[in-house]
Image 1 (cartoon, rainbow, N blue to C red):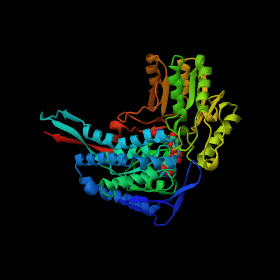
Image 2 (image 1 turned 180 degrees about the vertical axis):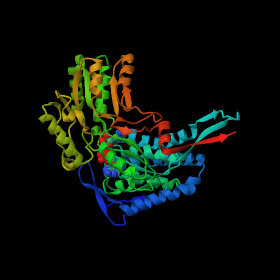
Image 3 (image 1 turned 90 degrees about the vertical axis):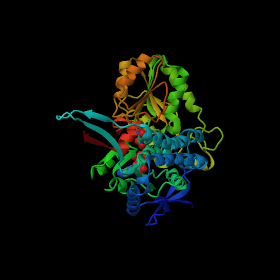
Image 4 (image 1 turned 45 degrees about the vertical axis):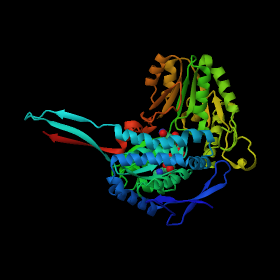
Length: 486
Ligand code: NAD
């Protein structure tokens, strides 16, 4: 069976322990390939390679050459577009159009956008008076932070990994990446592109494996890793923060969410239905920015619920390659068990199941996959577990509201604060609402519309720090002030 290896110092290497684990297809639960599981020796070697590369050709490279190299990486991804799409489809089982039109092209863009940004964003300068009247001048320069540990999740693996690797490299750092154990393929493939375009060995390293007491923790607790950027569950973020405390390393966290979608009666109805449908069910609901709580102004409530129900019942299950299929499985049997436990809990808590709530009937090999139905509930109090907790599945609870004040209170009564999507034609209200909802990212009459120059991150327990645009440069560089007495 095919094996995916670690990528250390420009070479694909197995684990010294010879340990491997199987990657199973979400579509069928059959093994796709084996993955070499990195232990401490591989993580140590990757960190050492990354440290050495900072002092080698990469560290000495002019900014212009580095930026040209990152453009070449983006072009190299585009050249092997079909391979990246196929790898991501196999790992996640998600529909072709999502991967080919959003996740892979945006992943390539992450290298170009941050390369251009790094070249064009100035640092600050201040003149100051001094007692002798001659004055002084201050200016700041940016230096790479060093070796960056990148820990990424499985839900949009290539996009979320490159969203960190792109700016980290643009700023002159080196990286040790641990992709999710569920989705190692595209991170490995990127190693081939790095070699093909001449990125020096040790700049980009990948180690595969699990989190606690495994490759993930070996990176986050490694004393020679200078900063850690992590996307994943809030609980994992807490564990990583503890590990990062040793040696006082900086962290950037993009964590969980329980995002509210808010629909006013004056919204463009069709746009709102389609927008909420995408936000709740795209990628089988496995999007951190997705909507799991929907609040609809009362006069529109019944009409909205039936339209969303109809939209859910029209999804076409299938393999990414199947003509017209637009709905994939969950990532794994383990995640399916978690989502199904919430489906059962919703019923126990007294929900009205508007649609779904179970497992679709699939035939042939697909019968073994991690399929679940898109699900809508109504009638639950805000205290219900499925209304409070992140499920990360294709489901939402819909509740009516009567006033702007009420819906702001409902949206904010949650420990998470990642994103929201608000649907209304009244733009004065939209501005007011957007400022009142406690989240890092608000979309009005849209969802998941991303300009990579904008701040991205979560409020409350949805994250620490912001990445995107200059904010990425803030995290991935050490800003140094130089004061010159004139
Ligand atoms: P996860 O936290 O289980 O795993 C994420 C990564 O962390 C994996 O690579 C995993 O192996 C690693 N890991 C786990 N425990 C670790 C430890 N103790 N030390 C070091 N590494 C460890 O998350 P997941 O299930 O892969 O992803 C889904 C979660 O990610 C959801 O909560 C979702 O909301 C969140 N997410 C957030 C954003 C965002 O931008 N805020 C984006 C995507 C996903």
